[in-house]
Amino acid sequence: MNVILGVTGCIGAYKSAVILRLLQKGGFEVFPVMTQSAQRFITPLTLEKLSGHPVVGNLFADHTVQIEHIALARRSDLLLVAPATANILGKFAQGIADDFLSTLYLSTTTPVVVAPAMNVEMWHHQAIEVNVRILKERGVVFVEPGSGYLACGEVGEGRLAEPELVLEAVFNALDREKSLSGKKVLVTAGPTVEDIDAVRFLSNRSSGKMGYAMAREAQLRGAEVVLVSGPTQLEAPGRVDRVSVRSAAEMAEAVFRHFEDSHIVVMAAAVSDFTPVTLASGKIKKETMEPVIALERTTDILATLKERKTDQFLVGFAAESEDVRENALGKLRDKGLDLIVANDISRDDRGFASDFNEAILLASNGEEEALPKLPKSELAKIVWDKIERAGDVLRTSNHGTIEP
Image (cartoon, rainbow, N blue to C red; front, side, top):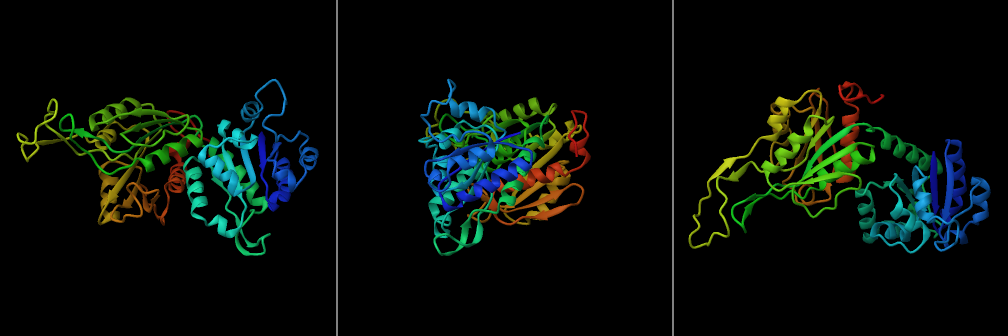
């Protein structure tokens, strides 16, 4: 397998030679890429001799008749940046492509692993935290920096992780990429909107962030993903088939259409329970509008899936404001779910619209796991790990096989 090793400019660059050697011992062919700043800390000749490949560092060098960053991205299985400076994290997060490595990143469709290295105060600066969160939400894997004596003379977090930990992260990222290969995953996300007239509607506070994180993580693990999404401001994850819907009825139709040939179904959307009995044409004038709106129940999608289920692994979400565990257990049982993710929406710093969530995972086999407040991207990884450990449901099914 081919790994691109990106090296950026900081004192930790000297460890890139050790990381390169460990990658080779792990069976990888390594293609080094260095920024101009990195070449002031370690010479390209070192990485060229160790890797057996020329170092690429100049975006405008005439390497071949091909567009070099595209060609290199296409023949790699993973992009590793170690060390990754604050500067390169900012470029990656904001889509700035002004050198070869940042341009290469935007051309990469394979897993990306970064190992940051910088001063402790820089690592904890709000700007860095925002960029890290953006990249994690896009599926970039981080090898957290270690603590200790830093080159600046201070002590704290920020030093490049040990090379062995970087290698482990590479193996884990590639394993994650393959784990759902050959499986079709159906994910719902966001709110639904029930129109009253041409202007007014009923909806809820769901942002779709948790469902999109679940879809993105499934795609990173190699699954074919269909994302049925209500109206959101979120960008669809790359290589995910998004089906945009508006109402609960439209979401039900899309889910039922894709359910039969899906292996795993993750119902993270907040589907409206009620819809107006009639839809007025045009805008109802307030002078003639009645203060009471007649409602009827929408289709209970999960209840219908329970009746249609064959060997699909069915995951539900429960957003509760009280008795979270008890209400989630009831939904797990009543809807015939294999797993439910329950979270408390009574706190403003997690749940709806937040980038964070705190959840309890409850499985139909009685397993239970309480998780602390985590970024939704991290929670998605844990939930998918839980699904993949579910045993025969994934390893043997009428649809296909995943090796244990």
